[in-house]
Image 1 (cartoon, one colour):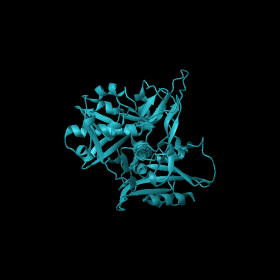
Image 2 (cartoon, rainbow, N blue to C red):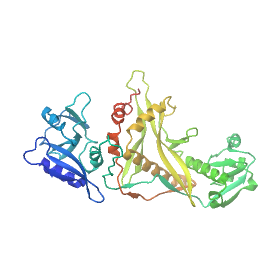
Image 3 (tube, one colour):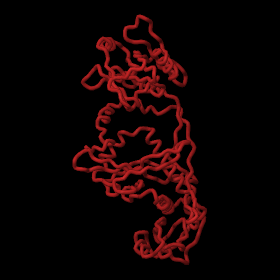
Image 4 (cartoon, rainbow, N blue to C red):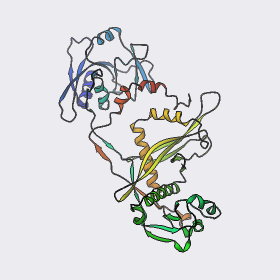
Length: 431
């Protein structure tokens, strides 16, 4: 039953599988890789040894991993093989299958294999990792095409919907920095405007707010947004990029803070050393992400840290449209408010752990936040609340001809194990 189950998975992956006869001495079958597009066999072979069990628990098995001890005779036989050998474990009662390269042993213990229940599942998603075993890395220029099928990809762009009008005026101040002291003396103030070379630009009427003190009131006029937004002069382009960023900062102030020095938006903390989550729509389902995570130190010094989901938002004009480019990142504080003294070490540790699914989820979360910030849903007690100046629209998904062979990278990169060993950050330890 185990051999039949594994053969089925191999065929579903798109590979060829040849079952050995009764005289096999250490391999139950041979896998030959095929090109997923043409179906052509690639002449790349590897052996498979299948170990089946009914309902037994594996050595040191827990929710995340387990171990398996190879027999000395099997290991001796596999070392004489001129093709790679993988071990596949199949369990009947839960119909699970996990695999491992027989040479991928625990350091210092050549017979002991350690399986990761998330990373080492034997199914069509492992095609590229299996294929990478057949490559002779001693020969330069050897190429193996991606073996996974295509996948949907989201674009980290949002289309910006501009308001029909934009307000311009002359100002008694040469730039925004000079104007702020006067603005702070007023009431009902806002900062989503730009002053450069004595010209004021905003998406709202400055006469209705404290900004009336920093413009020449008789010079305020509303013009078609296209006059500024799609003008080729460099000053107009710079004004638009700055105005778009400031407007997003204004629209998301309930959720986000903006760091001017780092040009980084990050989720606000709700209290000192407290975590918080944000609910958003994934592809079709509502989900949530812990956007502020507080970690306590395992050391007696009591020094922990707080990780905030963050992003750099870059505004780009393509033809006759504006887009915002989302680049997910992280920001670190000591308690949710004070910047951490050594954020680079924490950021490097987090980046080592990230995979495609994590980054994809972050992009979708930021897209949801921006789209929601552009919706106008005034309640009973804030009927006079002005509508947001900007709206955002998602771009359609695109179909990639091949999936990203991420799992293959994580195992073939020579630094992969070293990086995994240095993973101290999610557990709250700071090296």
